[in-house]
Image 1 (cartoon, rainbow, N blue to C red):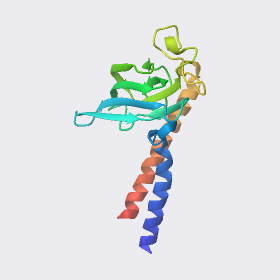
Image 2: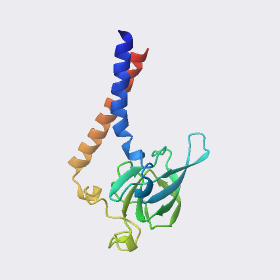
Image 3: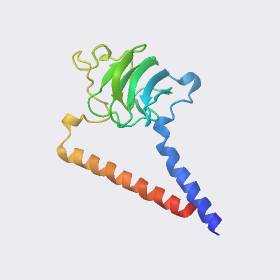
Image 4: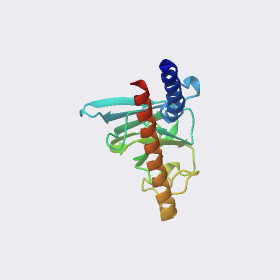
Amino acid sequence: MRLRSTAAVLVGALALALPTAGPSLADDHEERALGTLHYSYLDASGSQRSGRIRPAGNDTCYLLTRTSRDEPAIEVRNETESLAVLFDNRSCEGEAETVLRPGAKAKQVEVVSVYFKPADDENAGNGGNGGNGTWPGREDQPREDQSSPDQSQNRDDEEEEQEEQEEDFLTAILRALH
């Protein structure tokens, strides 16, 4: 009986974990891919590592696999056919760190996610904000400087609640396995 409950917990864990891995799984698109975005990051031991993603389409936020705010990508090369808008957060929100045209490279950055836009977009030449390299944000999300403090607090509360739920879930799985 214990084997059944353990198996059920494991299947449940996989069912919940797989959909959250979606943004990072941008590498199996064969001919539909926009190209490849290459990046370098430092791991916990300080060793430089390489990563890459092959995005399936534009207007999507992708996490740079194995990066975080503590261990961001430090160098990025855009070998896609799209603009790569780089962010220092997981949700591609706020002001962009930089915008890379196809074939461009950025060094000495600290980025965690990328949002792809068509290269022929009318704001492509100037990053969308008067040529200063900033980006006004995703079209499906309000900019941080346009949202009310209540919205920012709600977003923080939601992220904190989600992290707590994930911790509780992982704790339950570990208990079931022992």
